[in-house]
Amino acid sequence: MTETVDLQLTTDAAGRRRVLSDDLLARLHARAADYDRENRFFAEDLDDLREAGYLRSAVPVERGGLGLSVDEVNHEQRRLAYWAPATALGVNMHLYWTGPAADRSAAGDTSVDWLLDEVAAGKVIAAGHGEPGNDVAIDDSTTRGVRVDGGYRITGHKIFTSLSPAWDWLGVHFRDDTDPDAPVIVHAFVPRTAAGVRTVETWDTLGVRATASHDTLFDDAFVDERHVVDVHPVGGVPGPYVQGIFPWVLPALGNIYLGVGRRALDVAIDAASTRTALSLGGAAVATNPFVQYHVAEAELILEGATGQLDDLTAALASGRDLGDRALLKLFAAKENGTRAARAATDLALEIAGAGSIHRRSELERLYRDVRAGAFHPPNSDAARDYIGKFALGLL
Image 1: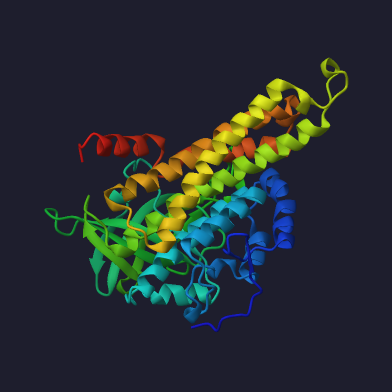
Image 2: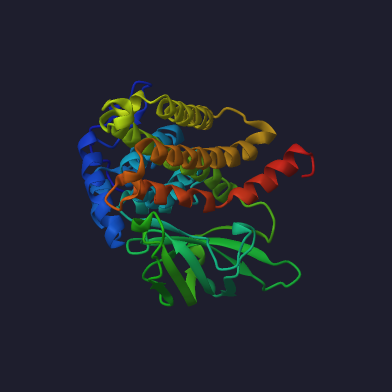
């Protein structure tokens, strides 16, 4: 266990603790454009965030962390995404493993305390769930595992492995067909040092380029049974640790992209306040009623999603019972947050004008980054499928 470092946390107006200083956020923002242009991993950002204690923000204080709640982490992720979207998204794939582990520890379940200790010691966790052709996420897997003495041997192909250059532990799921009549899904962590684990650099995308979400290949790689965190029937309900991921990852995705949308609108408002037009007699385009209308529309969109996300993360932090609509609320928060961000960013480009499509424009990068929000599981179609069936009483 690592001894807690005395970090100077601040608080916001609502009393939420903050890890990220304004100076740190400014440094991360200054690198974002170069990371994007060069399609380069945010290695320096990660070092700065580790030094600030951010990677262990959700780890309990007694285990060497900062003990931030899910509400506090979500607000920090929104602030981080405002200045460095790809960095926030990449780090999220680490944070969403640590929060549920802290929750299990608080509930008296010590089975994943070892993971908290690894994070407190500076290790980086990543997610290995995406697979080519797998459109049911963790409900099934094309990666296969075979039971052997002391664990499993796994073979498969994972995609969208954010943090590929830096992870120490990769959280994966795979299918074990040892009993063909009762196949199971196994969730476990694989160390980077395991034989048969290989990264293939494939990441060259429209947006969020600095996440370095390359492919990961497993060729008869060994998974130690001590690092297995759940086993459940294919299509069945995961155990509490894996289920606990959803309250941490889905609102955070909504908040990350909401941060991007907020930044885009703020950049556009600044442009509208300084850009002039002949048709306005040389006045700022902010005086144009159509520009004012677009700004109002974007503000309304962002306010709605912000209120929804803030209410949900506060409820999660307080333990409020969300009843049988809990999963619907989580799906809706992710979907509405990412949708609002895209809509606000689209309006931001109209507000700022044609100059926003230049590659040198921050808005051009934000426009590309915000597109990725629709594709995180559950994607927009999957969210609508669940919500529609739930509302109609078909589940």
